[in-house]
Length: 203
Image (cartoon, rainbow, N blue to C red; front, side, top):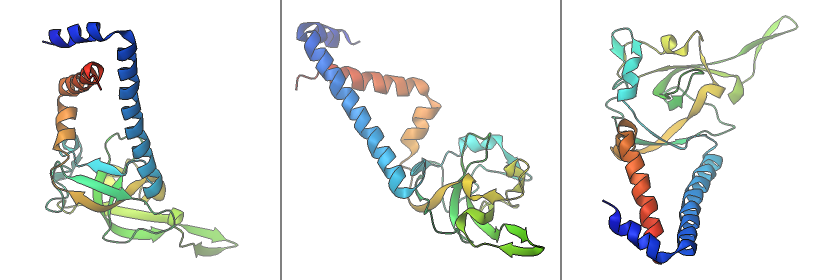
Protein backbone atom coordinates (compact mmCIF):
# COMPACT_ATOMS: atom_id res chain seq x y z
CA UNK A 1 0.00 0.00 0.00
CA UNK A 2 2.76 2.44 0.99
CA UNK A 3 5.56 0.74 -0.93
CA UNK A 4 6.27 3.81 -3.10
CA UNK A 5 6.48 6.06 -0.03
CA UNK A 6 8.85 3.64 1.73
CA UNK A 7 11.13 3.59 -1.32
CA UNK A 8 11.06 7.39 -1.36
CA UNK A 9 12.06 7.48 2.33
CA UNK A 10 15.06 5.23 1.69
CA UNK A 11 16.13 7.41 -1.20
CA UNK A 12 15.85 10.69 0.74
CA UNK A 13 18.19 9.66 3.56
CA UNK A 14 18.24 9.87 7.35
CA UNK A 15 18.83 13.63 7.70
CA UNK A 16 15.87 14.52 5.52
CA UNK A 17 13.59 12.10 7.38
CA UNK A 18 14.72 13.54 10.72
CA UNK A 19 14.05 17.09 9.47
CA UNK A 20 10.54 16.12 8.35
CA UNK A 21 9.84 14.47 11.73
CA UNK A 22 10.84 17.70 13.47
CA UNK A 23 8.61 19.70 11.12
CA UNK A 24 5.67 17.41 11.84
CA UNK A 25 6.31 17.68 15.60
CA UNK A 26 6.43 21.46 15.21
CA UNK A 27 2.99 21.48 13.56
CA UNK A 28 1.53 19.35 16.36
CA UNK A 29 3.13 21.54 19.02
CA UNK A 30 1.78 24.70 17.35
CA UNK A 31 -1.73 23.23 17.38
CA UNK A 32 -1.41 22.41 21.08
CA UNK A 33 -0.15 25.93 21.84
CA UNK A 34 -3.08 27.47 19.97
CA UNK A 35 -5.49 25.27 21.96
CA UNK A 36 -3.89 26.24 25.27
CA UNK A 37 -3.86 29.91 24.23
CA UNK A 38 -7.59 29.78 23.49
CA UNK A 39 -8.11 28.18 26.88
CA UNK A 40 -6.29 31.05 28.60
CA UNK A 41 -8.23 33.71 26.68
CA UNK A 42 -11.62 32.11 27.36
CA UNK A 43 -10.69 30.94 30.90
CA UNK A 44 -11.82 27.37 30.27
CA UNK A 45 -10.11 23.99 29.89
CA UNK A 46 -12.15 23.26 26.74
CA UNK A 47 -12.89 26.35 24.62
CA UNK A 48 -14.47 24.13 21.93
CA UNK A 49 -16.62 21.04 22.50
CA UNK A 50 -18.69 18.76 20.29
CA UNK A 51 -22.21 17.59 21.14
CA UNK A 52 -21.86 13.80 21.43
CA UNK A 53 -25.39 12.51 21.62
CA UNK A 54 -24.47 8.83 21.37
CA UNK A 55 -22.28 9.03 24.48
CA UNK A 56 -25.18 10.38 26.55
CA UNK A 57 -27.43 7.37 25.99
CA UNK A 58 -25.86 5.61 28.95
CA UNK A 59 -27.30 8.14 31.42
CA UNK A 60 -31.04 8.06 32.00
CA UNK A 61 -33.20 10.78 33.52
CA UNK A 62 -36.63 9.36 34.40
CA UNK A 63 -38.69 9.20 31.18
CA UNK A 64 -36.07 10.78 28.98
CA UNK A 65 -32.33 10.59 28.38
CA UNK A 66 -29.57 13.04 27.71
CA UNK A 67 -29.70 11.89 24.11
CA UNK A 68 -31.10 14.89 22.27
CA UNK A 69 -31.70 16.70 25.56
CA UNK A 70 -30.93 20.14 24.10
CA UNK A 71 -32.83 19.79 20.82
CA UNK A 72 -33.81 21.89 18.97
CA UNK A 73 -31.16 24.32 20.29
CA UNK A 74 -28.29 21.90 19.55
CA UNK A 75 -28.02 18.60 17.72
CA UNK A 76 -25.44 15.85 17.60
CA UNK A 77 -22.32 17.02 15.79
CA UNK A 78 -22.73 20.71 16.60
CA UNK A 79 -19.48 22.46 17.52
CA UNK A 80 -19.87 24.71 20.59
CA UNK A 81 -17.64 27.66 21.50
CA UNK A 82 -17.30 28.26 25.24
CA UNK A 83 -16.20 31.06 27.53
CA UNK A 84 -15.94 31.06 31.32
CA UNK A 85 -15.59 34.68 32.53
CA UNK A 86 -13.74 34.67 35.84
CA UNK A 87 -15.63 37.54 37.48
CA UNK A 88 -19.10 37.10 35.99
CA UNK A 89 -21.99 35.16 37.42
CA UNK A 90 -24.11 32.75 35.45
CA UNK A 91 -27.73 33.71 34.93
CA UNK A 92 -30.96 31.81 34.37
CA UNK A 93 -31.18 30.88 30.72
CA UNK A 94 -27.43 30.58 30.12
CA UNK A 95 -26.45 27.38 28.33
CA UNK A 96 -23.59 25.79 30.24
CA UNK A 97 -21.28 22.83 29.79
CA UNK A 98 -20.52 21.09 33.09
CA UNK A 99 -18.75 17.99 34.32
CA UNK A 100 -19.42 16.13 37.56
CA UNK A 101 -16.40 14.45 39.23
CA UNK A 102 -16.21 10.81 38.15
CA UNK A 103 -18.11 11.48 34.94
CA UNK A 104 -16.01 11.61 31.78
CA UNK A 105 -18.52 13.14 29.38
CA UNK A 106 -19.47 16.80 29.90
CA UNK A 107 -23.16 17.74 29.72
CA UNK A 108 -24.62 20.70 27.82
CA UNK A 109 -27.72 22.03 29.63
CA UNK A 110 -29.42 25.33 30.41
CA UNK A 111 -29.35 27.08 33.81
CA UNK A 112 -32.78 26.73 35.41
CA UNK A 113 -32.13 28.38 38.80
CA UNK A 114 -29.30 30.21 40.56
CA UNK A 115 -28.73 30.64 44.30
CA UNK A 116 -25.95 31.88 46.55
CA UNK A 117 -24.15 29.98 49.29
CA UNK A 118 -25.58 31.01 52.66
CA UNK A 119 -23.05 31.53 55.44
CA UNK A 120 -23.87 32.09 59.11
CA UNK A 121 -21.66 34.81 60.65
CA UNK A 122 -22.32 35.60 64.35
CA UNK A 123 -25.75 34.08 64.09
CA UNK A 124 -26.64 36.12 61.01
CA UNK A 125 -27.28 34.45 57.65
CA UNK A 126 -25.30 36.16 54.90
CA UNK A 127 -24.93 35.66 51.18
CA UNK A 128 -22.05 36.96 49.10
CA UNK A 129 -22.86 37.53 45.41
CA UNK A 130 -19.51 36.30 44.12
CA UNK A 131 -19.19 33.91 41.16
CA UNK A 132 -17.47 31.25 43.26
CA UNK A 133 -20.35 31.31 45.80
CA UNK A 134 -23.02 30.70 43.18
CA UNK A 135 -25.04 27.49 43.05
CA UNK A 136 -26.72 26.37 39.85
CA UNK A 137 -29.53 24.03 38.86
CA UNK A 138 -29.61 22.96 35.21
CA UNK A 139 -32.01 21.19 32.87
CA UNK A 140 -32.02 20.03 29.28
CA UNK A 141 -34.50 21.91 27.09
CA UNK A 142 -35.93 18.61 25.89
CA UNK A 143 -36.03 16.90 29.32
CA UNK A 144 -39.02 16.64 31.65
CA UNK A 145 -36.99 16.98 34.85
CA UNK A 146 -34.05 18.98 36.14
CA UNK A 147 -30.55 17.50 36.42
CA UNK A 148 -30.41 16.73 40.16
CA UNK A 149 -30.26 12.98 39.44
CA UNK A 150 -27.17 13.58 37.32
CA UNK A 151 -25.26 15.43 40.05
CA UNK A 152 -24.28 12.18 41.84
CA UNK A 153 -25.36 13.19 45.35
CA UNK A 154 -24.93 16.94 44.97
CA UNK A 155 -27.93 19.20 45.37
CA UNK A 156 -26.51 21.95 43.16
CA UNK A 157 -23.75 22.57 40.68
CA UNK A 158 -20.90 24.70 41.96
CA UNK A 159 -18.81 27.11 39.93
CA UNK A 160 -15.94 24.61 39.86
CA UNK A 161 -18.10 22.12 37.95
CA UNK A 162 -18.76 24.51 35.07
CA UNK A 163 -16.47 24.20 32.04
CA UNK A 164 -17.98 27.19 30.29
CA UNK A 165 -20.95 29.00 28.82
CA UNK A 166 -21.94 28.57 25.17
CA UNK A 167 -21.31 31.76 23.20
CA UNK A 168 -21.68 30.39 19.67
CA UNK A 169 -21.87 27.21 17.62
CA UNK A 170 -21.39 25.72 14.17
CA UNK A 171 -23.94 23.08 13.20
CA UNK A 172 -22.74 19.56 12.29
CA UNK A 173 -19.06 20.54 11.96
CA UNK A 174 -18.17 18.24 14.85
CA UNK A 175 -19.17 15.08 12.97
CA UNK A 176 -15.50 14.68 12.03
CA UNK A 177 -14.64 14.35 15.73
CA UNK A 178 -17.53 11.95 16.27
CA UNK A 179 -16.33 9.75 13.40
CA UNK A 180 -12.80 9.69 14.83
CA UNK A 181 -14.14 8.76 18.28
CA UNK A 182 -16.51 6.09 16.97
CA UNK A 183 -13.89 4.55 14.70
CA UNK A 184 -10.44 4.69 16.39
CA UNK A 185 -8.87 2.89 13.41
CA UNK A 186 -9.80 5.88 11.25
CA UNK A 187 -8.01 8.18 13.69
CA UNK A 188 -4.81 6.12 13.62
CA UNK A 189 -4.95 5.77 9.85
CA UNK A 190 -5.36 9.52 9.45
CA UNK A 191 -2.48 10.32 11.81
CA UNK A 192 -0.28 7.68 10.18
CA UNK A 193 -1.09 8.97 6.70
CA UNK A 194 -0.36 12.57 7.68
CA UNK A 195 2.91 11.54 9.31
CA UNK A 196 3.97 9.54 6.26
CA UNK A 197 3.11 12.40 3.92
CA UNK A 198 5.15 14.76 6.09
CA UNK A 199 8.11 12.38 5.90
CA UNK A 200 8.11 11.94 2.13
CA UNK A 201 7.41 15.58 1.34
CA UNK A 202 10.46 17.06 -0.36
CA UNK A 203 9.99 20.72 0.62
